[in-house]
Amino acid sequence: MKPIIKIEKLALKLIISVGVVLFVSLFVWSHFTIQYQEKKLIQSKIEEVDKFCNTALHFTWFAMLHNPSEDLHDVLKSMSENNEIEAIRIFNCQGRIKFSNNSLEMNSIAEKDDEACRACHAKDPPDLDIPREDRVRIFKTETGSRQLGLVHPIMNEPNCSTADCHYHPKEIKKLGALDIVVSLKGIEERVTLSRKLSIWTTIYLFAVLGVTIVLSIFRLVTRPIKKLINETDLIASGTFITHEHDISQRDEIGLLSCAIHDMGEK
Image 1 (spheres, one colour):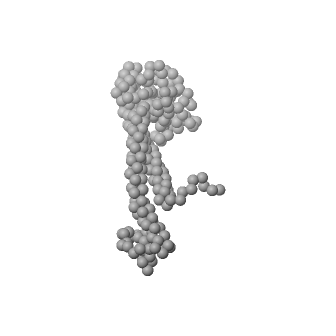
Image 2 (cartoon, one colour):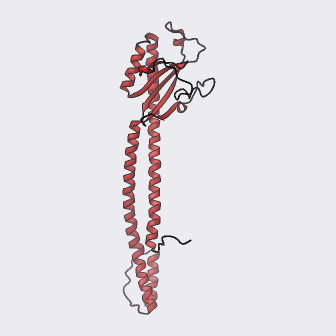
Image 3 (cartoon, helix red, strand yellow):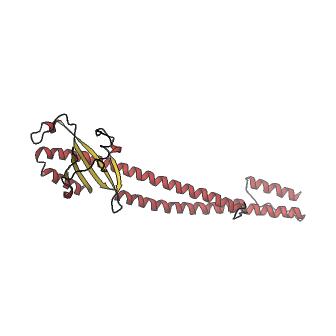
């Protein structure tokens, strides 16, 4: 089968082949660079949320020992507003939402197959020692925005089992879970900006390197080869005229030009 487009010019073949390789290389480099940056930003966000979970647990522990009905709700609401938290909830061991920054969720019961509960209740009985990466979930809301959720187990501590306000038996290891959801809008905006900058950087590098390659091929390949063709034509017709050799290249084309010029003089 004959090719649809037949390319006969050597310079054009070099430009197309080098251009394709250059474009693909820049595209792949940009793609994986953006993916790596997004992964690092999300990892940093997970660590930030995990630290916030520890802080929230410390304040909730203190509030539950003193006045859980009022202080805890105010603490959670204040923490969610000041730290741009989308949702912060505390589940008890029966899956009931005891505290939340959203009053509509109060006292509702979550199912075991809900997104926030799936990590712990994937096994029966529930797994109490789950790595942090398995407690993280990234999902899209109804509006299409992405959010990150992290579930942190609330373990039974000595103060919880001996307190007078609400005592938990020592044999109960897990009292509930803290679920925090944050928006990934800031990360998406940074990734979008990086993607735009990467596209323009790719276009700039492709244009600059493309022009450099075209000029280099024209000066070092196309023009010397045309002179070689003219000299061989003169030798073939027997009309070669001795003249000063004007190709100063010291590469393979320059050596070939010197050989043809010497042959023409002889």
